[in-house]
Length: 282
Picture (cartoon, rainbow, N blue to C red):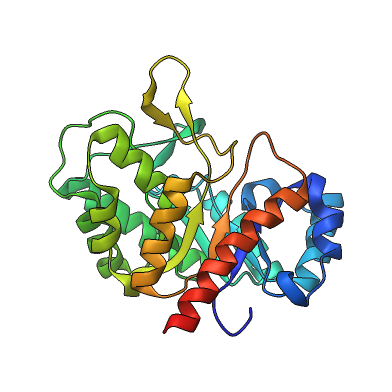
């Protein structure tokens, strides 16, 4: 990494060659990449070889989607071992997961499903995080989910719940600004209030992504689609957060309708510019 936290991109297979060839000076000097470890939990093959090549030139972050930290079953031991193998092999500067459940009886669900923020769930999540962090040998960053419908049974608001988990387990927070914006819009809450209250010292990474209106409900229900550019509203919230907290490693995500690499670099450069301006203003 460079002298201050910089902006990275989610690495896609179609961009491996361009990513590896990116210059390490100039506007891409601080560029880093993030991948889902579940796509690389194999003993060998071309994907691991490509990732080795990229890692030789750039810092790497691993962003898990399969641990089911908030599920009612303990973290899968085989999954943890495979995750640890990747950590030991690629030495990522960050590892992260989601505050969600995605597994039941060995069946994996395609969505990261929400949870009630109550005392029972707090204990369960903290136990699972303790087990996962011990197995992985690293602290995790925990990402805030997107809310689409009201869920009964909450004892905490989201910021307080995430803060309590972090204080109890030593995990950090991955603040997904797009998720905050969508949840606020869908639930009729204030994204600004959420971002102004989250403790700066707990934030280890920030995510930015695009979204779309639901095909049926339109703007009344926004979907975390990761298939569009980051919206102007999310860029504004991101600048607000960074101005308060100071720079944090920031990832631009695109998981569907993936554009050419150069288009993603332009979004990465915009995030990097916001981080740099915050450093100069300090």
